[in-house]
Structures are given as structure tokens and as C-alpha cells.
Image 1 (spheres, rainbow, N blue to C red):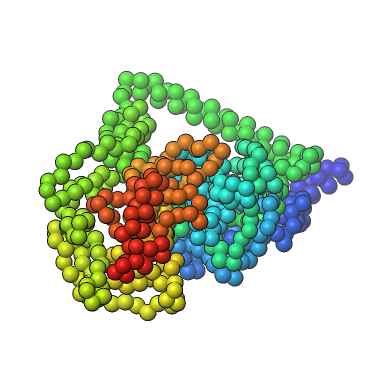
Image 2: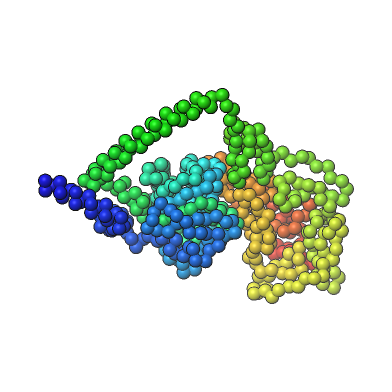
Length: 521
């Protein structure tokens, strides 16, 4: 009798402590066995979500003891730099072991970035959930091979709650979803040589790409590869306790009740199915943007022709027609379209320019004159002025599309180039211009890489050989390139084209530094 009374009191106290939120405090005072609390950081607390971020709203999550936030709008900018980013990255700097914990509910077919830690184009750690391809992608930087990606075939974008744990330890990575180990494999060890300029983004890759849509809760970064026990403490046990046995009995009783109710529902459903045998049901497909199409419907999605067949979306590359442009016009891309269209061109000093392109020249007195192609004629532009530059004259360079010099390292992507890189494409700065480059795991759908489509991973996870990628291969050997389109078309994706174009520009300007005759680069 005394034992029964003791067990009854223990069960009552356990239930009471659970309601008060003290159960974990009494029985699990640490984050988990082998996990140092000093190595963990709560990203929501560091970002101060809900106070100053547009497009992020507080929502209801499965854990009532912490806040959850809805990431919805596409104009948000959830990023931290400086001291806040330093507190976060200090948990990872020069470490080869870490764990990323996220509780999430992602919208169906959404493709978005959960967490991104990068400095300019160098991604030290990025976790991306691709709903269209049913994949989880991890991008990071390795000492031996540079940028590297690991792809795990698993769908999180199903509109349901999931617990995600990504643990990296040395040369191995383990993926847990809902406390189940899904994958474990050998990888290239990550290299966390984080600089002071590193930025941390939450729910997006940057201000223009990789928007996650859904709800996230308990986003935690741990400097240990045993962090999964924080989400699932039972994974670190070997023998069950009395409380575990009591919980198991309770679950069995609940399952018996669920089984009885489910059997009744199944019997009623079978009766309804028999009455529906003579009905014909229309099949539908849900596109990535949420639009529902009927069977055999067709539509254009970026640079793809898509159709609804057997209740599934099937897409193939868009076939562009061969153009026969009339005189004084040439084939060129128009913003928002995938195929080239005939556009009026201007002939100026032996070269063709499409509408809107500019060209600077010097007169006999050395004065810079700026011209712009408008409706088939080059017109002089007079309303321009040059801002003061903060760099020495030795670091100033001249460009062919303006009369004002710029400092070496100028951000051309911020001037509007980034808007040309539309689908799964990023803007990359050159010394005298910019170009579009397909993201990891995508190939170019246009020869200028402004539109990119998903493709199979390349052998070994390399990213340098993808179609439409960075010209020149290594960052130290990229040519500077000319910003203006010389022949009325956009930049092709081939490396040889860039090399020939750079060689021609060197002959035209008369020098390696870009300050040849006429002051042009």
C-alpha cells in the first residue's frame, strides 16, 4: 500500500511540474548530456524579433514556453551585423562541431533559407529547404575544396510542424527530423574562419533571394555536435525510467481509444466511398506560387512550359523562337521575359546599342560627352553630375557607360544589376561591372544566367563548373569585363566569351589598367 501511495504522489507531482514548466528544470537542469550551455545561442533572442522587423509576425507554435514567428512577406530584411553577429558567430569560429536546431512549419512547395551565415559571396553555413525538389540543402565552406553543398532528399515544406536538427562533427553530419535519425554521412570538414564582417540572416539568403514562408520556433545554434539531445532528450537515454513506463502505459491507452474511433470513421468512410464509385473527380495541380490548375492545363512559369498531367506538375524548358529582326533592330532580352525580342538599336562609332544603353566619349578637348540610345538614335545626355569619391586617384577607374569615375571595388549590383538576376540567380560584382550567376544546384535557362532552373547535383558537390557560373573559375582570375552590351545581346555564360571580350577591351582602351586613350577603360 505504501508503494502504491508513493507512485500516486510521484505521478501527481510529475503532472503538476509539467503544467508549471518545472519538469525540465528538475530532471534536466542542463541542455543535455555533454552540451555546454555557454556554447548555445537563441537566435530569436539575439535578433529581437517582433520589435523592428517588417514582414515577421508573432504566431502560435507547439511550444507554449517560447515565442514563434511567422515569416510571410517578401520585402523583409531579417539580418544582424556587428556586435550582435559577433556574439552569434563566436560560437562557431574555428570550430568543426556545431548543431542547428529549428522547429518549423513551412508552407507547401515553398523553397527558402532557414539560416544563412556569410561574408559577401563566401557562405560559411546556410540551411535551405527546397519544397519543389523535396530536398534539404546545406551549403558551407571547406578548407580543401572551398564552397561545398550537401543535399538530403527530404521534404519539410508540407504545411506540418517538424523538429529539425542538423549536427556536424568533424567529417560527419547527422540529420534528425522529429527525433528520428534520417541521414548520417561523411563530409568535407567545414572551415569556420569567420571574419568580423560576417552577416547572419534568418529566414532568407539576402534581401532579394531565398525567402522562407512559414512559422519558425526555437531556432538555436550550438557549438557542439550533440545538440540534438536538446530537442529530443530521450535519444540520450539507454534505460527507461518508471516515469517513462507510466507514460508508455498512458500512450497505449490513448492509442486504443484512437484506434476505436478511427475504426468507426473508416467504416463510415467506406460507406461513402461505395456511394461515390459512380462519380468522376477532377484532378488538379498546385503550382509553386499556390495557383491551382485543372488536369491538362498549361502555363508559363519563368523560362519553363508547365502542364498538369495525372495530378502532378510537369515542366520543361521554354523553347524560344528564332528571330528574324528587321533592319535597325536586334534580338535582346526584355525585363520580365525569358526569350529575346527584336529591339530597336543605335549604331554609334561602329557598335550597336539597344534602347537605354549609354556610351561615354571624349572630344578633341578631352571633355567627356555622354550619349544614350533612345528610339533608334543616340542622344546626348546633359543632366549628369559626378559625386565626390572617397578613394585616391590611383584607385579610381573609368567606365564606358558614364563620364564619372568610380572607386575600385564599386558595388554595381546595388545600382540595379541585382534586379536583372531574377529566378535562382545571384548578382556578382566584377571590377568594372557585374553579371548574374546561377545559385548552387541550378543551371542557366538563359545565356545571361538571369533565370536558372534546378538540376541534379554535380559529382562531389562542386559548384564551380555549373552552367552559367562565374567566368574565370577562381575569384582572383576574373576578368573585369565591360558593363555595356556591345552587340545588342546579354552576357553569354561561357568562359571563353569573357576572355575574348576582355582581350578586345584591352586592345580598344590601349592598356592593362583600363586607362588608355580617351580616358576610357
